[in-house]
Length: 200
Image (tube, rainbow, N blue to C red; front, side):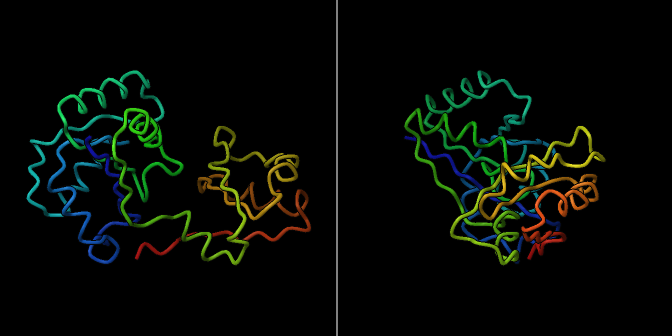
């Protein structure tokens, strides 16, 4: 059976030597098909690692929030028929965690692929490590909605969600509204914003 490699990418430019294990370069050198959130940045990431991989001989499949699952299923089935390994690249950090890559990972398991996650940077784990909150029992709720970036977060959100140590991700546009909503929504809770997480 082919292998699907889950390949972490950088959280900041020019940090590959500090945060990526050598094994990642070895995997990229021998893998010629990738499911990626953005082809342009994926090509730039691979090229920047300066491996022997020829970028113009590499296949990229779009896998983002708008990709029809049927397209991804057809692509991974075709790779399986040709016994070709594949990789999954996120825009930043670890693929499959708050990331569309989880879709193809689920399909790979169903089809009997070997799935191999590789070690690398993760903003979620860095935030958890730096928070001082309970790492034995926590929930990652994902991104807060960005449609109304300046609107306060409804108070019911926190009382429903924050039963244990919780992690949320949100855009900078949401930061002010989110922080203002905390005192009235969860006055007995502790909030630890994690920003400018170290990429090295």
